[in-house]
Image 1 (tube, rainbow, N blue to C red):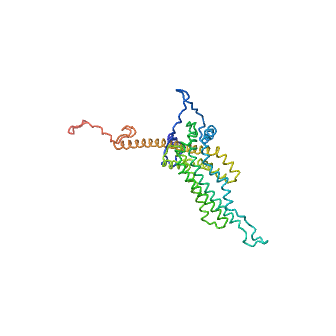
Image 2 (spheres, helix red, strand yellow):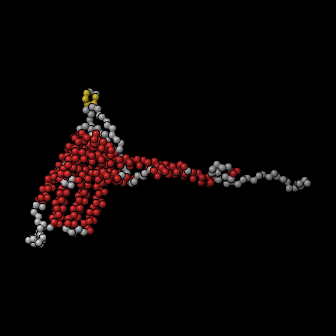
Length: 390
């Protein structure tokens, strides 16, 4: 009885792997080792091994600090891919706004001091033009440059992955272009989908703001924003995890699609946190030009590298948790199968004993355990002709 209760308690404590049929187990991608530098004949350069925490996100921060020099060298080429984004944000956006709204506005119409009614400009129409004719095209230009940034991110992500799993390398520039060559198509495909979804979400907001200024906002405008964010935000998270899994683990494209869903479902809070962490700098860039310059410098120095390490930590944590839960579930299922087989064997033995008329529990026939009738005691033969003596 006690063993049955213990098994029930163990089953209750074991967390079930959600979407277990979709999970495809995989190991971390094995990268080619960097050739060791031979110092003298028969002696190669030493490769130091550093100790970092086992906690996934704590390990990411420690690696950023411990491997900063190597990772910073890797990010130098990546910064070149961000130059078009910086040019549009810091110069072309202001130039384009002055080009589109270069006229001097007169908002004095209808005040009763010589300006006829309707002769001035409308503030609502001017703000609506600012949203739709200026902000919207600029955001679409920035979205196009984000695709270019994601292409450059492939090399930086590869270097960050090697540092996270302590796959030693010293030639940062060479490793960056190796990663770019191996994974550029992943970042172009999945990163492009993320950018397109984000652009659609931004366009829905700009359209609503314009309609609100012109007092023409209808149910369709509000529904476009709601539904684009309800479906768009999870898709952005999903494709970023697909991208991180493809670079970090030895999975096919189909396996990445399946495991990304399993990892997110079993690690919802960590996944949402990392996605919000990566999107927050883009939103902070819209606060003001001076503040956006500071954000850009910080992101170029450490932010993008930390972002790559955080995504690697997320998928590493998620895959490890899914693997542990799958292993525990398999062990529990095996125990339950053995228990069921034993119970089935006992029931078959009992049925066979009842059918053969044998005691089922080792009881003797004298105690009534058997089904056979007791034999009658033999009576000695007597001749009926002989009379009994009185």
